[in-house]
Length: 142
Image (cartoon, rainbow, N blue to C red; front, side, top):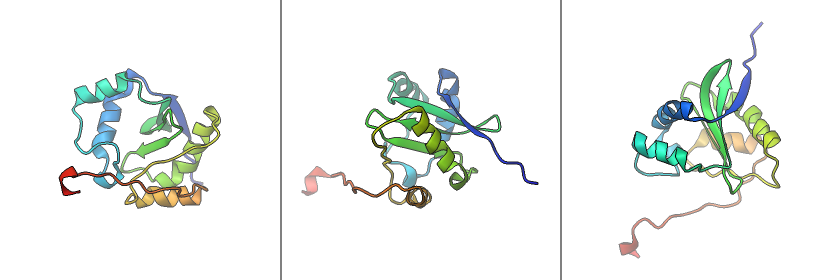
């Protein structure tokens, strides 16, 4: 019989900074919407110290850190897991736990539309597309 994997969340602490930085290094360009240039470790620590999120958790699976999930002050959920983890297998449990711990009227997820794995999971879990956002990147061409 296959043993089920136990997922849990723990609040991010300074002890998790190196793990979070390494996790960020794994992120594919198509998964990223928050920055175009990769931050230095010092910038990463400064970001952490700014307390950027309402809640920020490390995702633990069978005692191993496998990813992170946050809830922004605007009720946006962000989730990222190590490359070898299948997000399909943990997405629902992680989102349910974030919602259980942080009741809100609504929850949003911002993502790059090229992140097909996450788009698929959102659709399968009753998230609805409400907008596409575009950024003007070259003011001289307008």
